[in-house]
Length: 66
Image 1 (tube, helix red, strand yellow):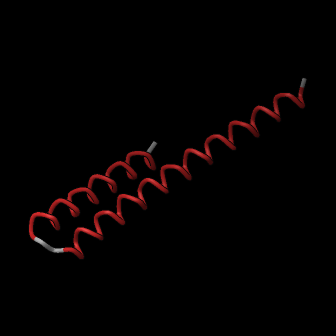
Image 2 (cartoon, one colour; image 1 turned 135 degrees about the horizontal axis):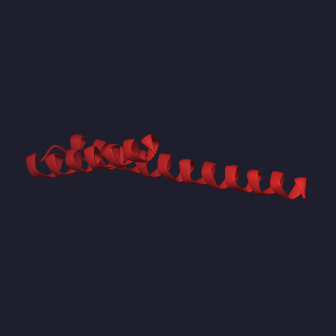
């Protein structure tokens, strides 16, 4: 759960950087914000995939016991 909250916070920080960069004309800050958002999305997808794999492995282990 902490990872999901951390990813959401990272995405929010990235959005804030992007908006600040747009408002001030700072293309570097804007790009950093977009990059931070992509990183947060990628981490979230990797976490979700890990959860799915873990669930599948647990399911297979239960099936082996039957």
